[in-house]
Amino acid sequence: MKAIHVDFAPRSPQRVVASMRLHHWLLVGIGVVTGLGGIIASENLSQQQEARLAEMERVQARAAVFSVPPAESAKPALTDVQASAVNSTIRQLNLPWSRLLAAIEHATPASVAMLELEPDAKNHLLRGMAETETPEKMLAYIKRLQQEPFLAGVSLTKHEVSDQGANRPVRFEFEAGWLETVK
Image (cartoon, rainbow, N blue to C red; front, side):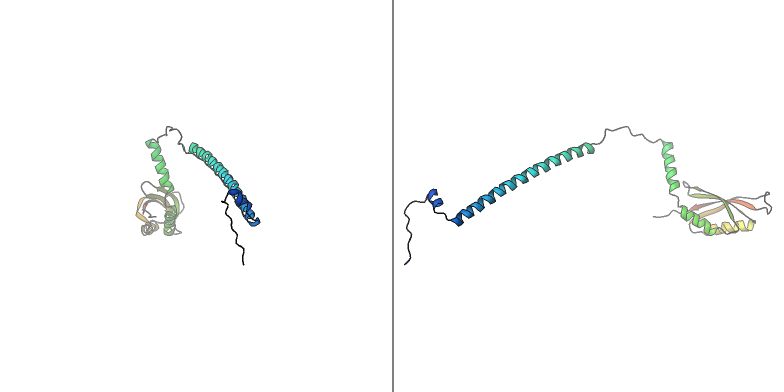
């Protein structure tokens, strides 16, 4: 038969501690060490969080210094003459040079010597001066320019026979507009 353990004394903390066996003490020790480790880890995390918050506040303070707009200074206003000059320069820089030159080169035969090209960006006008041997070649060149798809309104504005050359070349001036390019 099995022995029956009968205990009529009330349970007290001293009796619980006295009745604990080795494996109970090991579990309590592991629990205490784990609890202390958790407390230490929590304290470290709390200190790291405080350090990060302090660093974030310093960065925000520096950012606030840089994000404050500088005191309003008087911005120099452009005069009408200056604004007109800036706009003129922008128009000149935005000229479709490659298309203009390609159209002129395509239309110009070897018998025509191009002497001068002067674009007027404001009016979309190209003025040119050229020389050729005969008036017929001059008129043929003007017709070729008129057939260029990028050029519009090509017209002969002036011509003269030069007395200075041995062959008496025909010097002439023309004007041509160009079409707006859509980007």
